[in-house]
Length: 98
Image (cartoon, rainbow, N blue to C red):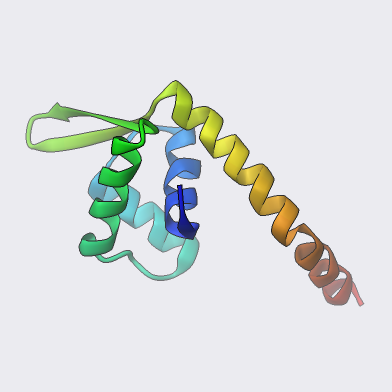
């Protein structure tokens, strides 16, 4: 898995399954920018190819859900993210508290 978008997708799908538009709107609330479909759907396809995300159809909608491997991957990615950026967040919070 590569990139912040993939991490964000896994993290939000960890909470609940979603269809593409719903996921795009959720990511927009978090990031302030709605992901382009030409970016979001290839990322979802790659996560599915890696066995982290599975899909099913409900009418015309495709519902995305994490596999067990995806649930583990989301937590591992979060641990990595926190290890890499944790010091920055900690320092930021100290500066903000001053």
